Length: 302
Image (spheres, rainbow, N blue to C red):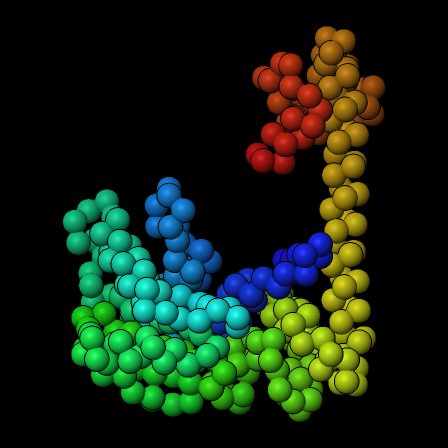
C-alpha cells in the first residue's frame, strides 16, 4: 500500500487512518467489518469509512467505538485539513442517503446509524454551530472524544491531537506534528512487536514519512525504515518478475495461435499440459485481434 507519491512527496493520510482505526478497534475485529471509501452511488460521492457491526447487541470495547450501533459512518480529515460546518452537513447528508439508497423501503433503520467526525485540530466553529444553531449538547466524555446529543442519529467528534497516547496510540500519532522522542520511541517499540501485521506497517510508514526528522533521532528507527523500504522493493520486484513471466507465456501462446496451431500441439511444443495453457488459449481464441498486452489485461482481470 503506497502511502506517499514519490514524485510530489504528497502524503496520503486516509489509507493510514483506515489502517489505524482498525488497529484501535482490534479487540473487536471479529465483530466489525471495515469498508474504505464506501460508494454511496455510481456518482463520485462516498463515505470515508463505513463500519458495520456483525452482532449488533455486542458492545465495542474500545473507547472510540463504544457508542457504535449497527452501521457507523466515519469522516476523517487529514492533519492539514479541518472539520467545517459544511463537512458536518455533507456527512449528515451521506448518512441520510445511505439509509435511503436501499432495495426495500426502510431497510436500514435510523436507529442503526451513528456518525463519527475525526480531525486532528479542535473544530471550534463547528462545535459552536452545533451548540448555538443546531441546539445540540456537545460534551467531552474523555480525552479527545466529544459526544454530540440532540439528534436522532448519535454523533461523536474525535480530536486526535487530544486522544490518549496510552488508549489510542495509533490515531493519536497519525500526524505530521509528532512532538517528542518518547512518543516516537513508543511507536517504534510497539511496531517491532507487530511488524508482521500489514495494518501496523501501513500506519508506521505514513507516520515516519511525515515526521522523518524526529524519527532519525530515535535509535533503531533507520533499520526499521530500511526494512519497510526493502520489503516494498522485494514485493514490487516479485510482481514485476511474475508479470514478465506471464507476458512471455502469453506471447508464446499468442504466436502459436496466430499460426492456427491446436491446443494440444501448443502444449506439446511448450512441454506442458493442455490444462496449463487452456485459460490463455481460450482468451486468445475468444478475442481475435487483441494484442499480447490486451490479453494480459484480460487474463489478470479474470
